[in-house]
Image (cartoon, rainbow, N blue to C red; front, side):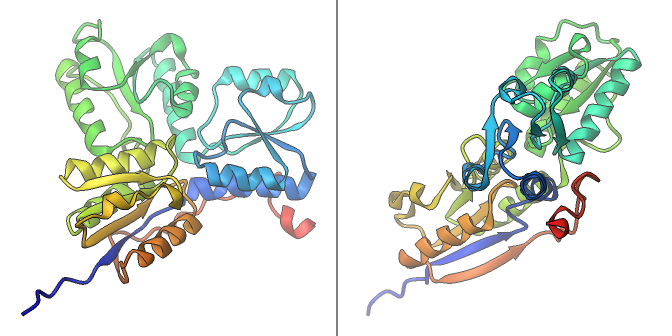
Length: 319
């Protein structure tokens, strides 16, 4: 009697993909192109996804590493990750027509940094020093801010236990990882201050929770997202921490068939900056490999919407 094999299936996470801040940032570039026409300059990648960047380039957006590369007086969009006051000052001196696409949740962290510095606190900024978001937040009060990248960094902090300190964090980190660092900081600094609500954004939390849910039911987890997307990388790490094999898939061509050997169930999700078209392409490829079953694992419902800046409101209807 032949052995009956379990049907191969995909377990699709919900929520996944674009968050409100990413949707807003992309819409800002699109509406700026509608209103002003190309070229519209964008400082850094508007969001960390290469497909999105290529699509906007085809419409006339020009991405630059510095505001210094933008012609004086031109339209310049600041990315969703935020910028430091020094960048804003430089843009003003160059008379750039600035449109700010900073995610409102990142702007909240900037305001917290300003307030803590004003109150004389030393800011312990949890995050990766080379990430654009951290560079921007750090720039609000560089003389008062120390970047803390991991638990090991906490022990190296040369501050007295009664120091007047408060923590902030990069919004796209792993909630589990960040809570461990905060615990270590509280142990070292009993009077540690911090935001009333954590800085990890709702979308990062929701996508990490959704990955946990599919990881528990899957032999393998695939996360659609670019290699420079912090929140996508954290999602892969969250799945691996649960003991499930997991890989980042920037685009469908990056799927390695060897990952699927012996795998019956594949969990699929996408980082907050990954468009749904890339998820669809991955699902189509998995069908070709025999994963014809599809189940939805919904762990939260998102209805957050961030409006466009007043200068762009109604730009589409005006064209």
